[in-house]
Length: 287
Image (cartoon, rainbow, N blue to C red; front, side):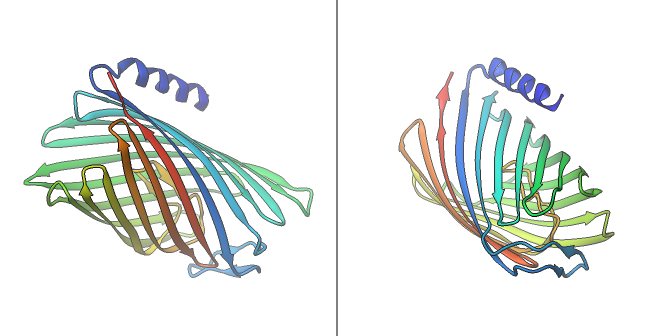
């Protein structure tokens, strides 16, 4: 049923994209894990299962964004993630769709995501499937080059365990000039199975020295769990506590209708760390 809904939204996206542009984008991500190879207890008392030091992940993802009325847009996306460990494998499919509507000076975003994952143990005769539904709403108010933001997300997880997660954020975007953009957001996340709330502070700094070149530095400090990024439509689908992240991204437009991107990302959880390398291509198709 979720796949049917996804393809219906994709069709609506393509049909209604009149007068502006359609922007398909594609990304490939490689992840490299390091950390303890034994079971342990995280900072919030959660027991984490053992894994080998030889773990890696790869993901292929694609998005189609249809802009209309200059500022409004639909977006649909799909991500295929594979994690390989010495002792187990995990395959995950992530479907996501969203819509943004401007009521200047206000704006509202609705996003929905569905995750279907399959875990297979290589040592024991054991496997399971998990499913996650994500519902998100963002509200924005624009005044004097500032965007004030409120964000809320709800996740319902069914699998090895069944639990709910609530994520709320408040922040502001600063549009200093054509070259400079800065965002800061404060979040809290609550995970029902451990009855604990975590707090974090994230920021994004974008600098555009040339019309076809930009650099983005982003990160967060604090603690969060299974964080959904409503701007990128991505999720850290980990119920272990994430402690910090930093990333550097470069975007380059060799021609008007093509954007190439490369990103390095490093993040630390309670018992392991991940380095990500991301490459992407985005095509602008005017209508």
